[in-house]
Image (cartoon, rainbow, N blue to C red; front, side, top):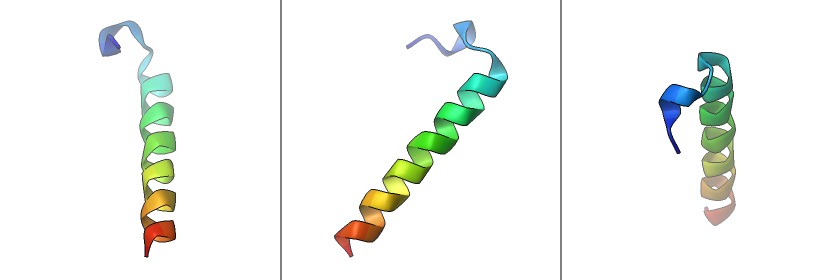
Length: 30
């Protein structure tokens, strides 16, 4: 995925979503 083609806002939202998903998986594993 080429980040430079994405608007900064969309990129930040994607980062947040990915981070939340990772956190959920981490919490479920515990």
